[in-house]
Image (cartoon, rainbow, N blue to C red; front, side):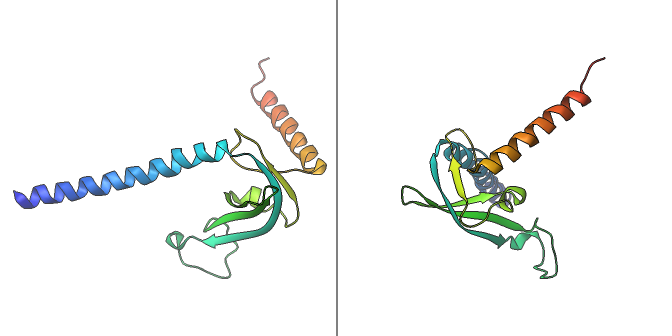
Length: 136
């Protein structure tokens, strides 16, 4: 009977710790990121291998096994290390200006060409959704 209670208490501890980690990553960090506001310049792009996602095959071209980061030097002198998805990460280049607005989760590249490209993407997305859900 004591052994059963001991196993149950260990299971409860493991479940509690797992729930805390999930809440931290899914709720707390995004809320904190949305409150930040800064401008700066990308100084470096880096990626870190996720060892739990499989073996590190140097011939693999997959990006799913990596965490991707922009290293940003803010205009206020702060250094930021921002974790991004692969497709946003690959658009960045060292030296590009970035802007993070309050309410947004990630910084965006702050050049006229990039803003125009984003506007075209939004228009295309809106057009496709209109065509898809158009009622006739």
